[in-house]
Amino acid sequence: MTEAEALQEARRRWGEHGYVRGETGAVSGRFSVGFCDGVLFFVKGYGATWEEAFANADRNARKPA
Image (tube, rainbow, N blue to C red; front, top):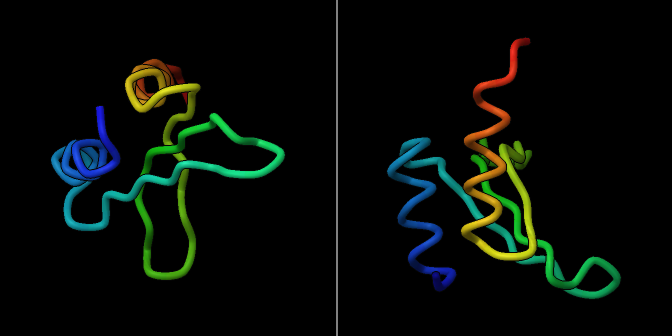
């Protein structure tokens, strides 16, 4: 999955504020997905690939509060 495809999937899941971020530097290889309110990025899932990040978001959504 490319970054553009990941962004499209994030917007499908969380609306127009869906957001993705690929980390660089010390945490390189970590991809985060979620939504941004204009200031803060709320991470719903993360992983070594975009697919893992969305799978992690799915698992997190099923956890009880």
